[in-house]
Each structure stands twice: as C-alpha cells, then as structure tokens.
Length: 139
Image 1: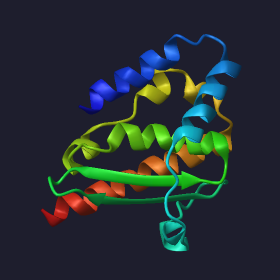
Image 2 (image 1 turned 90 degrees about the horizontal axis):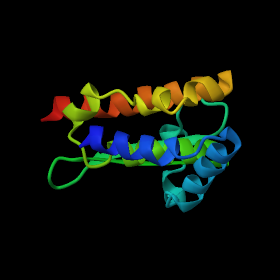
Image 3 (image 1 turned 180 degrees about the vertical axis):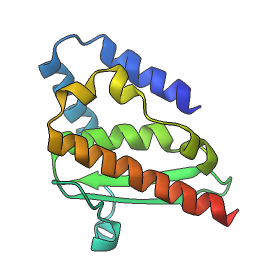
C-alpha cells in the first residue's frame, strides 16, 4: 500500500519538469490539506528540528491502521508534511517502520530543498517512525 502511494506521488511529480512548478504543486497540496484542530497545535505535538513550526500526532484507527495528523505554519512545509500524511495514513505501524519515503529522492526533492528544509523533513520522518514504533510495541 505504501509503495503504491509512493508511486502515485512520483507519477504526479514526474510529469512536471520545471522545479518552480513542482514547488507550486507542493504548495497547492499543502493548501488542500485539512488543518488540524488548534487544540492539537501544542508544544507536545511540535516536531523538534524544524525551522518552521510543524505540529504532528498519530493514532491508530479501529482497524489498527496508522492515522497521521500534521500541519505547519509554512506553506511549502505544509505541502511536504501533507505528502507524508498521504503516504503513511492507512498503513500498519509495522509497514510504516519498514518503508522509507524514497519518493523524496525519486522526484529530486533531496536535491532542491534548502539544508534547513531537508533537516526539517528528516525530523518529520523521524517523528513518524517514533510514533509507529510506539504503536507497534503496544500491540
């Protein structure tokens, strides 16, 4: 399931050759993303290591599937975190732990993000993996 979602993301971006247009696409994805409720925008849910403010939390649905919630105060970061939400929501915690978000490299994001944005993206992925690990240990 995660691999299929990664391929969908890759296909969506590979049709866009211009990086300015890819950035616009990321921002558009962020604009379409549902906000998390303000009650979840707390220091406890803030991702450490991001220059922009990113709030994130995860839960399991009634079927034991990972549900990731996230938001950011920066539009491009909001788009990036929206892609991660799309990728991992609906997977099991074990699937989340086993899967790396290779779409980042495959679409060239790793080469076109600033160092601070890349560090923030790494911090977001690390936080997601920590949530998945915690939930996998509860089962």
